[in-house]
Image 1: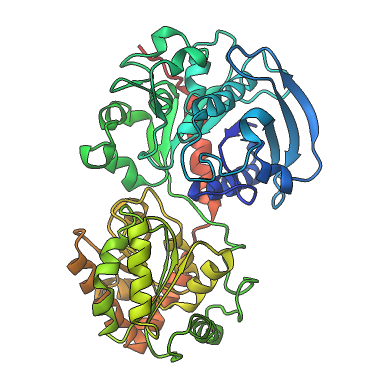
Image 2: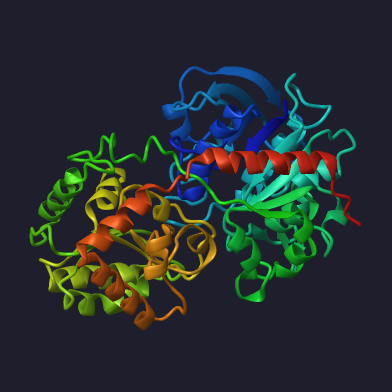
Length: 489
């Protein structure tokens, strides 16, 4: 049985800022279901301590050069009983705010030290000097916050574990000033082109991508995209040279949590063959948000960060034209201040057709997935995405830009794909407002053909995005890491 330490900076349901938490909460459980002995390592944020149950102290770290004293506790993730290792260091992790930013939205200045400690402990647990009996065969690192693990393992003669580095979003790299190196206990030779140096900065992610035995990212298409300059964020050359060790594995979803037949967030349940509840959810959503209540009006849903990456600027640009198609639009999210204000202004101008909720609500996000007719995801780039999976599961065909995981998980609805049973949404190429508008208009025309719409909705709900398939792919990557260790020059 392969033993894996899954090192991460967030895990649902304990602490979440994005998709990394969902993966960290679901993938380890799926791995255990197929016989991988996995444990999750996470910092002891206040949000974690507030929700985790009984724990036991299993180790102390008082002599890690450059780092404050810390302790390791063993518990379980509340919703799936996966063993959870909590790194307790109050001076670094017990503070108000988020895992990466303070309450004003600025990055914590000591993030290099905070996540350097997380990486250092993860590597120590994978060595002969580990203070606990359970020593992993592989440390699975996730995004820049654990990017130093492969470097620590590489320079530690006592290291036993191999390393796998997963990129969830290459745009976030953990780049810091060069003096950071000396405070983190890495040798001077680690800071170079063949190492952690990245255009004069010390890069956590670059270190992980260079020193890890195997690399993965969260969709096959994104794996190809980030080997090119347009989406490579300066690391495309390194990724291209490591293409033989680089695997794109599409994320899965929790099919129990996201199930319209049992979802406790919904006013009414439904399933394929018994779809009346979807109409009930639509009317309830229209009523709740002050939109014209009419189950025949096409209702477009958005749950997203309001950012340039997510392409919401294009959607806001065409929103007035969409109202001329008799469509309604509901937006849940937050982000760019200008986009937030534009969205609010549109809702004020079209109160019976556009509703906007700034912020996030887990309940409302489920209700939008269930109550909307179409789900809009025009991301400029999207490593994997999750809402397009949820949408298909809920019989709400997504409208997506052909990028990353969106391209890998949504098949454009045409006469041919409806006939052969592969259609699952609407896909556009070319990131322009007009292309987005024309694709939504095309989707609405299919919506107005009840026979085609019922067929499309059924095909969406037949899709299987459970984690088991992805978990087996990761198990094969672990095997590759053990059989083909990295030998950086």
